Structure formats: structure tokens, C-alpha cells
Amino acid sequence: MELSGSAFALRLALAVASGGLYSLAYPPLGWGWLVFPALAGLLVALKDLTGSQARAAGFLHGLAAFGTGLSWLYELFGPMSVVLWCVLAAFPALFAQFQGLAASRGMIGWKFAIFTALNWGAWEFVRAELFPLKFPWMTAGLALGPNRMLPWIGVYGAGVVVLLLVALVVGRQWKTAPVAAALLAGSLLAIPKHLLPEGAGSIRVAGVQKESVSLHEFLEATRGLPADIPYVVWPEYAVPYDIRADQADWEAVRQLCRDRGITLTFGTQLHQADGAGWRNIALTVDPTGVRGEHNKVHPVHFFNDGIAGSSALPVETAHGKIGTPVCFDCDYEGVVRRMTAAGAEAFIVPIMDAEAWTARQHDQHAELFRIRACENGRWMFVCATSGVSQVIDPSGQLHGRLGAMTSGILTGSLQRETRLTFYTRFGWLVPWAVLAAAFGCWVLLLRGSIRRKKPEAA
Image (cartoon, rainbow, N blue to C red; front, side, top):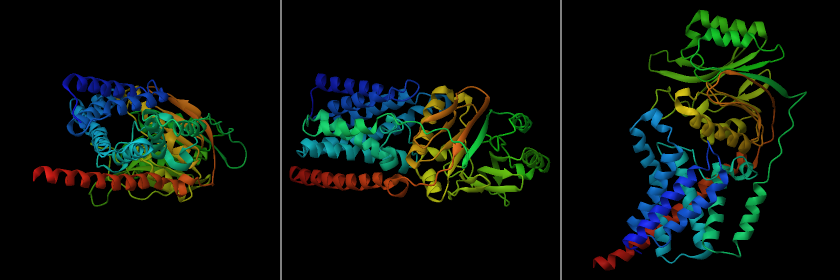
């Protein structure tokens, strides 16, 4: 139905307010519980709206959410960031379009609540993992942080659960909503930290958090580490050239590993022999030489970040099978999961978050690594250029953190794990099932819309 001017203006104001509230669920404030009233506000704003009015409300909600929550994009892209915010806002607009279609077809009650959850989850999954400009930040499940749902259905599945609960409450399904709320509350109970690992299977690791410094500074910082540190990690782009093409620098790194008896993982480049480009890699070296390398699978959009890789395999080291994804690889669910399924027992992750990108960007990015650790049940050591470096346990809880906009050393211990979570085995298929179910609903709704228009045209 079409609302009058003043009534529609109030709905648009509510959509904008709900978008602003949604952004507060993520760092720097990180008030994750606000995702519930924010999404409830959006559903109320969309009630009885169809067509262009529904799309406008959904778009303004998204623009307020992403424009506020991802305001740091302006530091990277300037005025072009407005276009990026609009692209992201198109997904809530599409969600709103199909909400209006479903309501206009008379869908109500718990059926409408289920459709709402599927509709949101599908568009969110497309936006985060499938769209060419895929961007997995600020999803509904991410606002919850590490929780008991992640090892089962992952962050996108958790987002579907959030929307289902919100839709049941907004739809006043009082018989079903309390049950859903109880299940969600149980999933969000505080997860106890794993005990710090000691003895067999544990790995002492040190990360050198420095940005835009020379190889010499990384070498000196590593030489100053305690003698009982057997594994060291430097950030992505620690050596922003093909180190193996520079005989002196390459020998200096190898000699460091021999002198200290360490395994070292660090970010560097691999230039193609035919001059066809270069690859952004995590290179792992020990006293015996190169143990392995990982080619970054997900280069950062709009940056010269090397040729994308395709494989996701762990590296065999003296400390077990170690996954070494590079930075943006951990924003998406696939690389860490595939490495875990291939035998990775722990993760060492070099990343680059430039100081110029602001502390807000650093803190928001840091949350994604906690999600990946919890989904796959693995310890993870993240070493950043200017923060945030972290030691994360298999429940996604922190055992060490070196914050943004600083330099320093982070040390911690990791435990080798071999058990596979349900998510790693099968749960990663949940968002695909959601997408398939939603797609079927979209097709039926669009077909019904076309059939209703034909008599009118006649």
C-alpha cells in the first residue's frame, strides 16, 4: 500500500534512525545487543510498504548504517566512498522490496517471520560472499561476537536466527517468540576461555607489530625476543618486495632462522618469472629453508594487492600443520575453513591495516578473525602492521591483544587442535541452503506479481 506524505516521511525517519542504531552494534562502541532494536525498527518502518516506498526505506536504512559504521571508507576513497555506501545500501533495499511483495501477497504470522529471516540472510550472504564487490563487515551475526552457534551454523546462520527472533517479536508471535528467544539466549551465554596451553602440542609465538619499517628493524626486533620463542610472525607486506630475488636480504632472513632456531612466517611478494605480475604471499621459513607459502586468495578491492591465489592448504612445520592465510582471506569464510578441513591445527595470520585507515577500521576488522577461529575451532595468532594483533582461542576469546596505532611485540601460546567442528564439515552449507530457499520464494513472488499486473494491463 502507498502511505501518505507525512506518514511515509515518519517511516523514512524511522528507517534512518534504525540504520544509525544498527551501526552502533559494531566497533568502536561494539554494543552488539543494539542489533535487535535496530532490526526491529527497520521491520516496523517497512510494515505495509511496497514498491518504491519499501525500497526507499530499505535504502535509507542501509545508507545510514553503512555511511555511519563504515565512515572510515572516506579515508581510503574520498568522495568515491559515497558510491560504495550506496552499493551496500542496495541490499537492504532489495530485502525491503521482497518484504513488501510478501506482505502484499497476504503472508502473515510465523510464515512471514521465517520468510523475513530467509530474505535477510540470503541478501546478506550475497552481499558478503558472492557479489563482485563482496564485503562481509557489519553482518547481523557478526554483532553477536563469538557464540555457541558459530561452530554449528557460522556467522551467516547466526544472522538468520537473529532476524527470525526479531521478526517473531515484531509480528507478535507470542507463542513462538519466547522459545526462539530462549534458544538464542542459550547460544549467547558467556563462553569460557580455553586454558592457556602448556606442554605437548603448545606453540609459543611472538608477533612483531610494525608498519612501514625496514627489514633491518624486523630482524633486530626478532633478535631481541626471548630465547624460548620458537615461532615468530611478521605482518603482511613486512617485506614489500620479492625477498628471494634479493640475495643479501634473503640470506639475512635465513641466517636469522638458523641463529635463533625459529620458524618465521611473514608477508612478502613473489614476482612472476615472465613479468606477468606478482603475488602477495605468506612465506614460512625455518633453519632448513622454505617450509611453504600461501598466495593470498582475496586481494583487497581497488588496491594493487597482487594476483589472487586459489589454494588453501596448511604448511607443514616442525610445530605441526599451520594455516597461514593473509589478512583479507579471513574476512570471508572459505579460506580458513578449507585450510582447517585440509589439516591445519593452528593459524598464524599476517595482516596489514594501515595506520591511515583509522582505529575504527582496525577494531572492526579484528572482530572477523575471532569469528573465523570460533567457526572452525582453532587457535589463531594474528600479527598486524599497526594493530590489531591478537591471540584467539577456539571459542573466539582473546588471550592477548596489541591495539591499534601502536608498535610493539605480542607474545602468546597456541594449542594444536585436530577436531573438526560441525561448521567446518557441513555447517558452512547453511547460508547456501538459506539462499536456495529464499531464491525459490523470490521467484514465486515475482511470478505472482507479473500475473497480477497482466489483467490490469489488459
